[in-house]
Amino acid sequence: MPVKITQAKVIVTCPDRNFVTLKIETDEGIYGIGDATLNGRELAVVSYLEDHLIPCLIGRDANQIEDIWQYFYRGAYWRRGPVTMSAIAAVDTALWDIKAKKAKLPLYELLGGKCREGVMVYGHANGQDISETLEEVSKYIELGYKAIRLQTGIPGLKSTYGVSKDKMFYEPADANLPSENIWSTAKYLKHTPKLFDKAREKFGFDHHFLHDIHHRLTPIEAAKFGKSVEDYNLFWMEDPTPAENQEALRLIREHTTTPIAIGEIFNTIYDAKDLIQNQLIDYIRTTVVHAGGISHLRKIAALAELYQVRTGSHGATDLSPVCMGAALHFDISVSNFGIQEYMRHTDKTDDVFPHSYTFKEGMLYPGDVPGHGVDIDEELAAKYPYQPAYLPVNRLEDGTMWSW
Ligand code: CS2
Ligand code: MG
Image 1 (cartoon, rainbow, N blue to C red):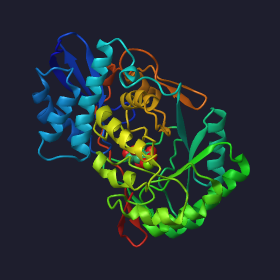
Image 2 (cartoon, protein in one colour):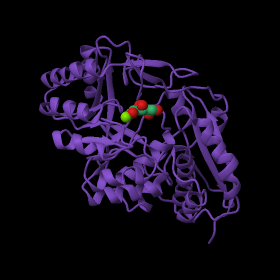
Image 3 (cartoon, rainbow, N blue to C red):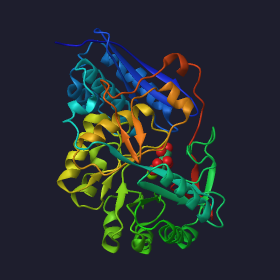
Image 4 (tube, rainbow, N blue to C red):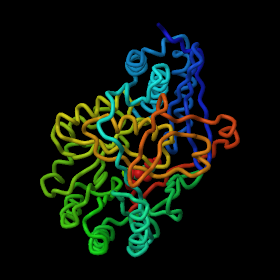
């Protein structure tokens, strides 16, 4: 029995940071929502949805999730890219939400059911220096986290990735035009291994420690870093080098056993196909919101499963609670789940996006309400208009543009 899409709208709100949400309504009175937030390029996705996808959505059968996905992917002619795939992701997520609500089931039941009771998550401990970072690690251990990402300031650098003033909510889009950061690989490579040496000395090996290099090393520098931290048994080193050239990861692989996680900026399976098939990575970080939605993320996870690569989806503050909610239904249902990033949202954000997921002792639980379990309070959302905000850019000390 078709479920006709009667209207769709994009809701832009900024409760402490910008979020873009697509809401699809049907002739059965059931609606679904999907995250379409692309940090620093939000308005491009708004236009892609409002000007190009929504006009083609009205009147379609909401049941036909895969056909609509294919229509928007193949039908665009100009395929792939973060804007296109975030827009398609929002449609896909909203349609899965509708299908699950209509079936009166939590979404994971439509994805094959639970493979585990809860979803292991990791939080972000960061500090201006090693001792402040270790203090933050203690706080996350007290909160019950089993896995913690550690990022610390680098002596001689004014700022670096992942170190924020606000400890619980890391928001890098910090200005209405890109702020300029300065980077030194030499200073980073000299200092960061000491962080993990001190952390393991203080906390032992009972917790998973993760680290995000954020695309800043060349392959041989990343190999050097990976080797230098092998004794500290990292759960993973993330984005060690820019991965457009997937083959570059082979050089890192040949030199170190430190596990590698990549993919938060990927938007289709093709960005990761060679990495996965050649087992050049251990975790794929693609997300519901930026990699084409639940339908496409399941295909990436299925390919990864063949090569013993596990999921480790991105979950920064700039991915909305709608993405987090949908991600947890995906996470709990895939067999090759690895870990889920969980950077908490502010109370203001959570008020706009009421949700059924809960945190307990280092795990997130999606909840059992029909759908993905996240809603949007449109009246409250309207109180927080869009605020222009850009991610920083990064330069080497000699002024050369570098990866942020
Ligand atoms: C980071 C993100 O969470 C992570 O792993 O890479 O903080 C990333 O910098 C932001 O999501 C970019 O908007
Ligand atoms: Mg990252």
